[in-house]
Amino acid sequence: MSAEVAVRGAVVEALRGDADLMAGLNGLFDGASGRASAPYGVVGDCVALDWGAKDVEGRELALTVSLFDAGESPARLAALLERVDPVLRAVEGAEGWRLVSVRLARSRVARMGARDGWQALVDYRLRVVRG
Image (cartoon, rainbow, N blue to C red; front, side):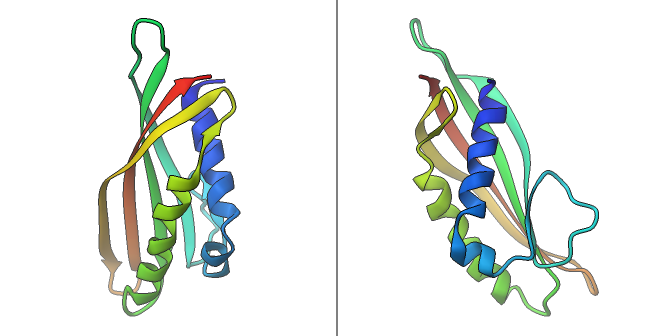
């Protein structure tokens, strides 16, 4: 299985398995969901680059997790966002791939519009090797 699919699936499973995160969300989706009601989360793009060596097959993955909330302030969203990092750092691997490192690349909290609420977007860099 490709690193992108395997690791993405492991991340979705880990996030859905976090009781504190899921207690604050109406759902966590693998890709965009047109029918979700806030607050909800989305595991978005997963882009892979080669990160191998002579005898090691490896990938560096850029993975995006977004959280959406319809609140007046980003306070509830901030509490949910705090759960994402420890969950991703606890993922050990995925089918056929071993996680070597997890690093937060960037995060952003922004108002989507006066009536649309807030979005938190976090990008992670995950390095994995076959095995």
